[in-house]
Image (cartoon, rainbow, N blue to C red; front, side, top):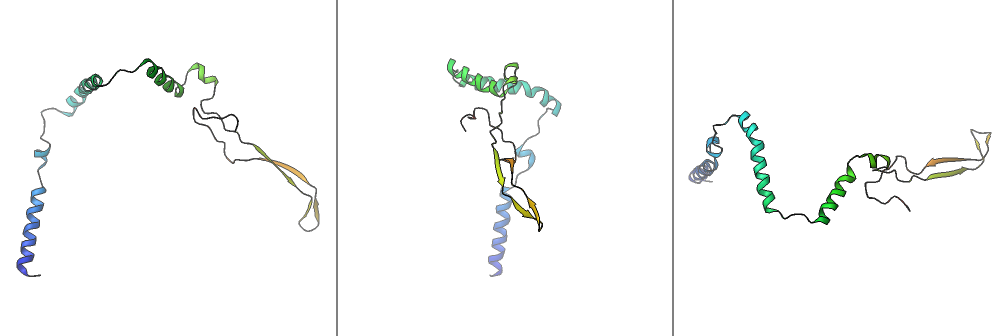
Length: 135
């Protein structure tokens, strides 16, 4: 590559990179408020923004309100659902294994016996609304 081509490439690269740079104050000009003022005023600004969003949304029908209430209540704890299990245990059947009579450690006879162990090594729980009967 010749010296003029490499110089032109460097000059072009410098111009390109300088065009992409801006100062912080140009992008985000400093305001007159302190952080405490922004924090204290932030709640009212958020509240008015939510009011504006609420005017754009349609109202829920009675059916949608009851459905959303039921879904929200199914995950919260109340006196009524404390008795029932929100996350019921899934069935974990017992497996019965029969060990035939055998000889162990050379000449020691071991009579046949049955042993019981759970099918799953951990207890599994169902999510709310999952079917747990007839499994």
